[in-house]
Amino acid sequence: MTKLRVGLLFGGCSGEHEVSISSARAIAKALTSDQNADKYELLPFYIQKDGIWQAVEIAQQILESGVPLQTQNPKPNSPHPRLWQFPALAGEVDVWFPILHGPNGEDGTVQGLLKLMQVPFVGTGVLGSAMGMDKIAMKMAFAQAGLPQVKYMAVNRSQIWSNSCVFPKLCDQIEATLGYPCFVKPANLGSSVGIAKVRSRTTLETALDNAASYDRRLIVEAGVVARELECAVLGNDQAKASVVGEITYKSDFYDYETKYTAGLADLSIPALVPDAIADKIQDMALQAFAAVDAAGLARVDFFYVETTGEVLINEINTLPGFTATSMYPQLWAATGISFPALVDQLIQLAIERGNTITAEALPV
Image (cartoon, rainbow, N blue to C red):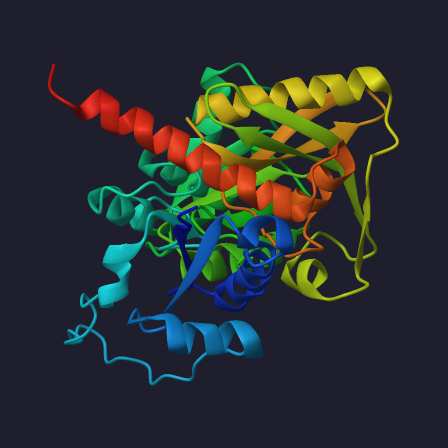
């Protein structure tokens, strides 16, 4: 039996580089486990923080050590001669498994590159990845689909880094529309980078200025007292939803440190919620998946307001963390799909979708 060569693509040019390495290590282990070793040949590719691709030998070293390759920061506006020279082995990949979190990894950019290569790849395509990454576009898609959300405002950097008249009026509008507490977020970053919970005018002004340093598009959301529930989705056109899980923590909100520091957050799977609420969340997760045209996998996050019984959608993550302890694979483990089996299914879904797209593109 000929093995499929799986190009595991990880690292990348984002603040979530280290998270990507952790996810890739878990996937590599699953691909070389007994039930997958006979089906797949692992070809790891590592993207350095400066954007240069490294092939199997160096990529394997990174997978084994878990430590990023130290590189010098490139000079601004200085083209790197090797930036677009891909390793020769990239042409031998049968199916790609990109596990690049954050900008340049799950925002449609690398998905567009892989699509140009005309090789199937795991996960959502260009459109869904871009919408899933941009919180403003995402919320517009959710609104169009009729999914209930918290109140929010879209803000541009130009409104913040403006003259002394515009910025105060913006803050006045946020206070009048959303009140306190509220959350300030860059529209296109993941893992809670650049996010702040604010309770006063002074902290609002600081948070807006800080978030604007990360992205020219920002979103400000009203705070809500609610339980944070999550549901995983797996599939293409006939996707299915996992059991519902819950995240609890003692910090003020689910920030970067809480997410990635052992012991600071607890996962409860399945979540102790009424069956009707779990059913509603699963149904809304599938609606959100379809609303952004996701494929393969996604994790959808919700707020459950117990006092009113409301379920509000928070966001969709089209390329969620994929370590053995991450919520997405744990939700499927509790639903009856082991980590190695999950990796196998995602590859098969990628091939299925790739074949469908190829067939649609062929001349009649």
